[in-house]
Length: 127
Image 1 (cartoon, rainbow, N blue to C red):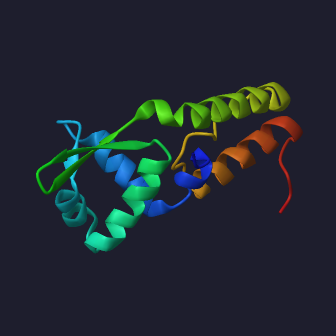
Image 2: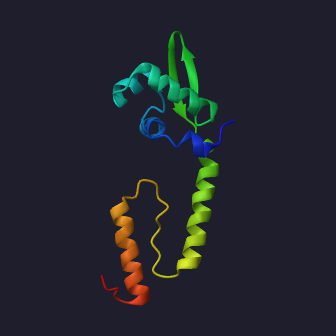
């Protein structure tokens, strides 16, 4: 089985996971994913194969159609790692602590939070 970090390293695969996770009915066909992502069917299929082999999605076959569903348990190792990282960062940084482990956090926000922490901890830093 592929390492979950390698599986979700690609932005297209993360987009597929977001789409599958966000669907109200729990699954999407390859055609629906192609339409939503705006990329070719062979490209979507290639990424779905990696996600499937990594256990992040599973597939249900119905005739010639394939329906994919997100498997959240497959990302448990990633979640544990992020939680451990967040806990160790909190212990070493002290207050104020801003959780930067949330995926998708803007770099500008992280820089702003770091500047606030530095100013709070050591006072105003001259530029």
